[in-house]
Amino acid sequence: MIDLYTAATPNGHKVSIALEELELPYTLKILDFAKNEQKQPDFLAINPNGRIPAIVDHAEDDFAVFESGAILIYLAEKTGQLIPSDMKGRSLVLQWLMFQMGGIGPMMGQANVFFRYFPEKIQAAIDRYQGESRRLFRVLDGHLKDHEYLAGDYSIADIANWAWVRTHKWSGVTVDELPHLQRWIEAIRARPAVQRGILAPPSARDLTHNDNEEQARKFSLEARSMIEMGQSKP
Image (cartoon, rainbow, N blue to C red; front, side, top):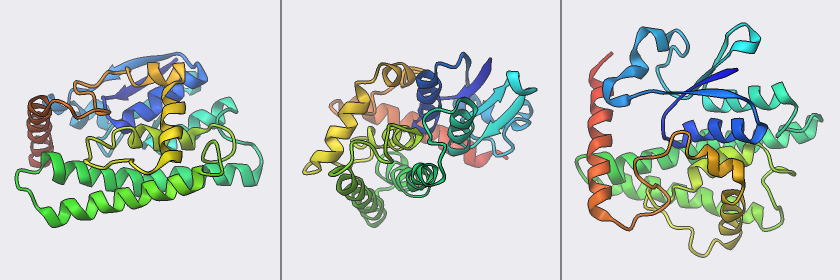
């Protein structure tokens, strides 16, 4: 059995989707950011960085793994699924996984902060992070023009990138005129394991849509208060 310490974020959903795809039994341990549970000593013993997600694999002497990308690699290698065994195939998957870890995630995350959560609207910062997110989307679209998935067969690279890209509207970034990216988004969304994974746990706000501005404003204010709380406490 695996314990998954998580919350309803793209990084958290990356791992719950992978666990569902791999059909690994797991127990959901949802951390309450409003109570700063991710900074409590018992969780810091699992992840010294105080961030979600993290797992504890009880089948492997309670082995703990933190950082979402590292967790995906661990689970894929544990099961021999969602990552090729040959050197070149494995490298391709890791390249696109790192693309998400070093690019898509940080840029969309900062777009969220400045577009949604930051109390002041700093347009230069918004433009910077939305523009870079859009550029990275174009990279994905160009690659997906000639590939069904990012690295051969469906893999942890697709899971990692999709968990973020699906929330593009929340970041204020469109996928208009990116037909290959749109096709890939919808194909992965249709997978039953993916549908289960994004409900573990469900988001308080549907980040795939942006059609209720009052609801979006309320969600943003709550998220901002949690961010400020996390910054003010050690």
